[in-house]
Length: 316
Ligand SMILES: [Zn+2]
Ligand SMILES: [Zn+2]
Image 1 (cartoon, rainbow, N blue to C red):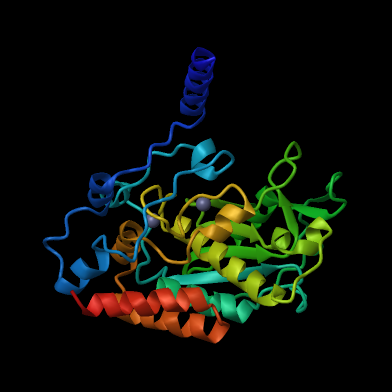
Image 2: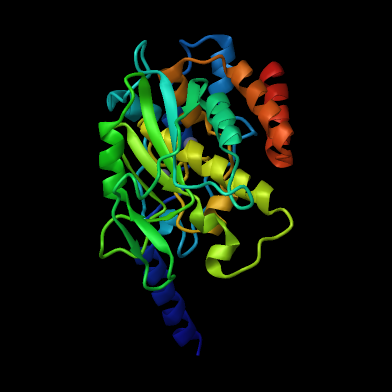
């Protein structure tokens, strides 16, 4: 009996090893990902050091992003060597392009999304006049499983590339409509072209009504909280920041709603250093602005995290 148990356990371990090739990075690898800080100012050394405000990336369970996609990670040096797009004198504004309607009762506030992106990236953000789906001649279909209208993402990206404003660092279309990238696909949350500086993201599947469920009491707040998080994750990609495998971080990949809800709003030290390399903001000022935003929106946990973070940045 014991022998059988041993064989079953052994086979189970082998199966797990084959199914999940991701190995959680240890402290040494996390420090290596941040890179040497010795030549930086005291403020930046503190901002990018691996302290208690940052948790290691969680070990992925079956179905989670890193379980299905065991990525190798992008260190700060990998990022610099990739020669990413950086905002410059000409292209330094983030444009948000609403696509279709944003009905008040079920949509995140565009003004709030703008304020969040502006505080998060320390860049000017402008909302463009909404695009009408019919007038824009975009390909649409009715999804046979959900019965809802979907828009073809490649059509949207082509349209955005053609209308990229001269001053745009990037142009992000956001929509409450569902999306699909190819007739053979069921749906997609979003799609981007880094080279084209454009992307499109849908918040449609953050609405419980989409799945035939009721909107809860806190619906508006949760919708905004989720939309803000996906927006900064996706804009982060436009800076050439890849998925994070080192810490619990807004740049963690996610395979399902539970996983994306579990990842935090903040950037880990590796990715904060990347964004700082590209934009060059005042780290303390950025955190203060984020704190103000979280307070205004009632995002208590996030506000508390920034408050603690600012305190830690001022003390050893
Ligand atoms: Zn991503
Ligand atoms: Zn990170």
